[in-house]
Image (cartoon, rainbow, N blue to C red; front, side, top):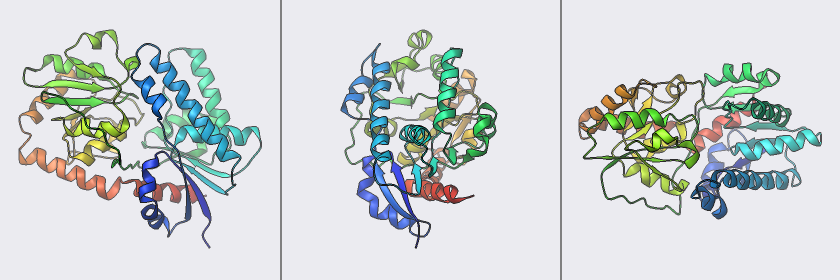
Length: 351
C-alpha cells in the first residue's frame, strides 16, 4: 500500500481537476490535497493601493499563510508533506521546529533575494535557517541556484535540490484585460530589471505600439516613471493571462543573477501563445532555448530594443510562429502542474 502524502496546493482552482491530478500521481503515492491561495479580496485591494499598499499586502499575505499553517499543524497528521505554497511551508516548518515535530517535508519555490539593509538581511537569514531546520528537501527552480544557496545557507546546504517548475493557468473565473491600442507587455516583481526595458522602449520608434508593465508600485523607480512605459497596478492572477495574450510580445527582463524568478510569467506566455523575449541568464536556460524564445543580453537596452524591433516586424513570419508553437508544445508536455507534482513527489522520496 502506497504512503499517503499531504500535498499543499497554492490555488483553489485545482479542485476542478483533483481526480486527474490524483490519477497522474497514482503510480508514485496516494495523494491527499490541501488547498490554499496566495490572494483573497483584501489582498487584492491592497495590491491596488499606492504608498502603504505594499506593506499592508505583505502583512495580509503572511497572516493568511500563517493561518493555513496553524490549521495544518493541528490537523490530521501525515508522514510526508509537500508544499507547493512556499510561504505556508515556511510557517509550518517553523512550527515543527518550535514544537519538535519530525515529519518528511519538502517545500517548493524557495527564493531569497539580498537586501541593502544588513540588519534586515541578517534577520531574514536567521528566520530561514530556523524555519527550514526540520525540512528535508528545499526545492529551487533553477539549477544554478543550488550552489548559490548552499554558499548562502551552509547549515541547510544538503537540503537544496533543483526541480523544473510547472503550473496550470486555466482559471475558472478569468478576468479580461482591455486596452485600446496595440501593446507589448511585461510584468512580475522578483529579480526584474524593468529599467533596461524602459531604456529600450525609449529607443524605439514607439508611435505604433505602447509598452505596459504589470507590477507593484514599490518595483518602479523614479527614473522608470519618467520613461514612455506605462505601469499597470492591480492586475490579479486570473487576469494576467489575458494581459499577456492581448499583447504583441511578452518581455521578461531579468537581472543577471543566479536566481530563477521569471519562469512563472514566461510559462504563462508559453501557454497562451504569445511571442517571448527574455534575458539570457542560466536559470532561464533550464527551461527554454532558441527554439521557443528570443534571448537578449541581460543588461543591454540596445540589444533588447533591436530584438523587440525584429520580432514586432516579423510576428506573422514562420520563424516567430514556429517559436510560439514549439513553446506551447513544450508547456503542455513538460510544464503542466501535474508534471510538477510528479517531479516533487519523486524528489521528496529520494534519500
